[in-house]
Each structure stands twice: as C-alpha cells, then as structure tokens.
Length: 274
Image 1 (cartoon, one colour):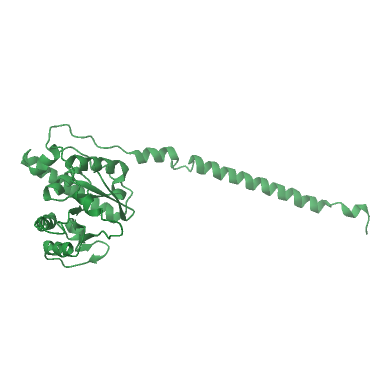
Image 2: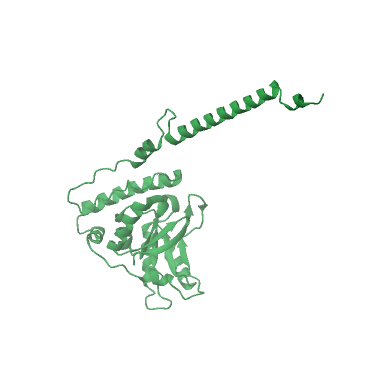
C-alpha cells in the first residue's frame, strides 16, 4: 500500500549503495598503485628512468694521445638506435675507416690525405652557387647509382664519366656519385672519373657540375679523402650520426675545405659550412 513507509529505501537498496561505494574505492586504489609503479619503475627488473638514463649514457673509448698524422677521432659516437640494415653498413664503414687510417699513417705526413687533414683549407662555394638558381628555375642534383640495398639493381653504368656528360648537357646543377661498393656498386674511382670529366668543361657553357660524394660518412678522414679525390661536397646523414657527431663532422668540413649537405628525414635539408 501507499503511505510514508513505502517511500523509504529498504535494506536491499542500502546494500546496493554500500557495495557500489566499496567497488569504487577499490578501483581508485588499484589505479593509484598502477600509476605509482609506472612512474617510479618498480616492476622488479630495474627499468626505472634513472637506470635507463645510466644505460643510455655509455662510455666512450679512450683516445690515443700519441703523435699521428691521422687525428684520433672516435667513430663509436655514432647513433646505435638505427635500423639493422643501416647498422650493418655503419659497422662496415668503421672497418673501412680503420684500414684507411692505417694506410695514411703508414705513408706518413706526405700522404695527400694527411696533408689535407693537417691544413686549414678554404671552403669553395661552387657547389652552393650551382644550387642557387634564379626563382622559378629547376635545380637538379643528378645521381650516379648502380644499385641499392632496398631497390636492388637500378642501372648498368659502365662509364660514369660519360653519364656525367649526359647530365651536364641536360642541364643538371650538380652530380652526386655513390662511392659505397658493397651496398650501391660505386667506388671512389667513379667519383675521380666524373670530376675529371667535368673539369674538362671549364671553358664551356654551362660550367662544370660540381660533384658530391654520397657515402656513409662517419669520420673526418673520409671527408679529406673526398676532397683529395676532387669532391666539392660530402653528405652527412643526421639520423645515422646523431647531433653531436654531426656537429663534429661539420666542423671538420670547414677545416678540410669541403661543403656539407645534411640529409635528414629522407631529404637534403640544407647546404652549410660556407
């Protein structure tokens, strides 16, 4: 029936309210515990922020202090959080750099690369000038590349110098030459041939195309090697080097006298060191 007694909640309704409040309290407690565990890294395996920072800091090797015609530049400062394919290429480059340093060291201070490393050289602006075309004018860096790890075979190039002439006649601004043999089928001899071919057009119009050495540069001795071979510019891959190592090699480009192109996020972002 009706009446005042029918409007009050019975014992069952009160039990439901109490159970709901209790469940809400437990849910809040569990959420707080999960938040504290995630923030302070108390998972029992030592993965908190402090330990992660110590792991990532690492220790660099000790630099050699003996007198040498080859500066003791570390190549172990390059980034380690890179794809496996790039990581294997960089490891191969470290071996190539070690061999080149041994060769230059054995030859002594009269080696052309040793001389380039020892001196202060002025950076030529020819590469940068070639890229600075008038507004609404297409600027092209034509490339000589036989293959790549991702694409496989690209082109059969028997005579890089002849191909560079075709690029020059077609109006290319600059020429990029791959010099990594294992991954891209190129050599430093390809670059030398292209430079020699382009230099033969000095008295013609358009002027010769300046040449970029496109490789995985991790040490300043590679920059000096490129300069001796006649390259006007080298490529630095920021994603492979990291900020610190990139800055060191930019400084080396200034000292050695070679312009640098920075490659980041898949495109050449800037030409610098002028």
